[in-house]
Image (cartoon, rainbow, N blue to C red; front, side):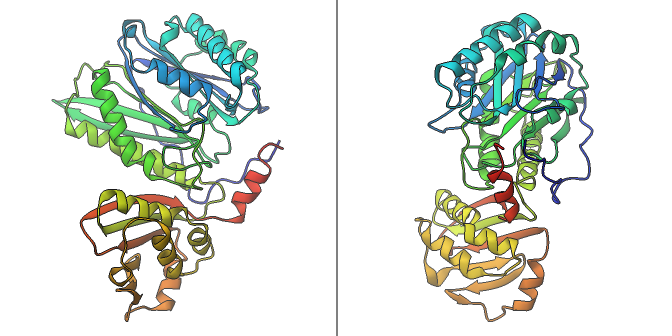
Amino acid sequence: MAKTPARSPLAPERFPDLPVIEGVAFATAEAGVRYKGRTDVMLARLAPGSTLAGVFTRSSTRAAPVLDCQDKIGSDGAADQGAAILVNSGNANAFTGRHGVESVKAVSEAAARAADVPEARVFTSSTGVIGEPLPHDRILAKLDEMNAALDPSGIEAAARAIMTTDTFPKGATATVEVDGTPVKIAGIAKGSGMIAPDMATMLVYIFTDARIGRTELQTLVTDCANRTFNCITVDSDTSTSDTVLMGATGASGVDVTGNGEFAEALYGVMLDLAHQVVRDGEGATKFVEVAVTGAASYADARTHALSVANSPLVKTAVAGEDANWGRVVMAIGKSGAAADRDLLSIRFGDLKVAEKGWVSPDYDEEAASAYMKGQELTIGIDLGLGEGAATVWTCDLTHGYIDINADYRS
């Protein structure tokens, strides 16, 4: 088994104190799906009346659990009977053919019996190695034990159980007061590599005690995901297994339909988790914001931003602390979106390095090189063409990425 990489230098100091969300409880177990001596299965049970929404990878080779979740997520026909989320790490149950479908069915049926919820309200996720049959019997053997151990305060343990090459568990929270009553949101995520828009090898589970209908919750989750999880990239690779699920238990009694403050709080939680995924990018030593303005449209701005963020030459220059703005010019030029060389301006942080198709007369190589030594960097690009703007987040590309992925299955 490959050694766990050292904790990312961009990691937060500690896991946050996540509040108990009334109406949801968690349990974990060591099932030995792939890893030894660590938890690798997580069960969350949501109370009757909970609504769920989700967004998923658009990969053409989606894993069996993703396809099953997509089939189930659009209905609240059994909402009055509760729901369950079951996640395993170490094996993605992807590209496993009929065996993968059978594994999802077996796990879902067993989880439904153990947690006393309808099978149609069991949502499963798997993350890890692709192309190996899921040893689901190991998971089944732990379900009764986990159901008996369900704990409303077990969310941090759940965050640890879903990790693969992650170097730290990821959590975020927010509380918003609605009509004098606090409404809580808490979320966990895993993700480190195979991270690109259309989501990533990323699993995210968010819970709130707010009351909101499924259709409204789905719209909110989709919008926030598009502005957060679909705006991050570590390596440009889109996973077979991306899943974001959100459950609203309604336990607070507060209806947040159309509430802007709740929407902004949820966006903040999702952005925090998305940034943590980038900060745990495999081998990452620098967190990079790529902010594009002045594009002909939002779509063009996003295309340019992703071209820069995904460029191996840009990312290795960042890793080497090289203020090589020429590589940014290259990435803009190859993106396929509208650009005019003679209108283009580039900044590193507050330092203007290029403008109007030429190096800035104010460019200071020494200052730019000093800026690149920081851990938090911004590459600002103005196209000078219109009002389109977009921001994405990425990390540098180091030899650590090769080390982790070359040994991933060993």
